[in-house]
Length: 170
Image (cartoon, rainbow, N blue to C red):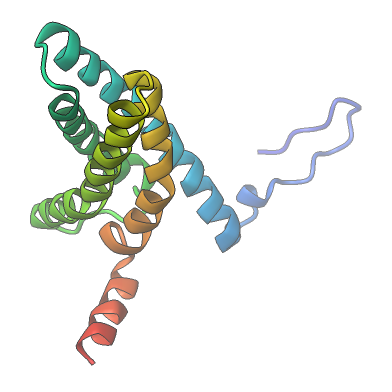
């Protein structure tokens, strides 16, 4: 499809329109980071809503409420990351999705739960800061580590995963 600029001159094709072209690795990584943060942003809403429900409606202790809210957000984020953030690395079989969920929960989930609980204990328990503001600080603090774990461990490209397995065994 050809189009023209406002002044009538022919428009140069965008890089994505040139046959055989694809964005640089740095651009792909940046776009994935943007997707990761978009999913994470929604996950923050899910986590905060769950935290508020567990604290306000069920009157749970702030640490128990935090742990449950983080787990709900972890599962939410996994489902979206598999279908959106790392959609270019689809699971080959349903069992691979299950393995990824276990890996995601063990890595991202552990970082999120341990990081959130430690930071919440410090910020709320010791410094007596607001639990919602403290939870936001904890979430942001864990996000970079979680992105790297997701990209390099949970959703690693198959060729990279095989080379990692070889490197670990040898």
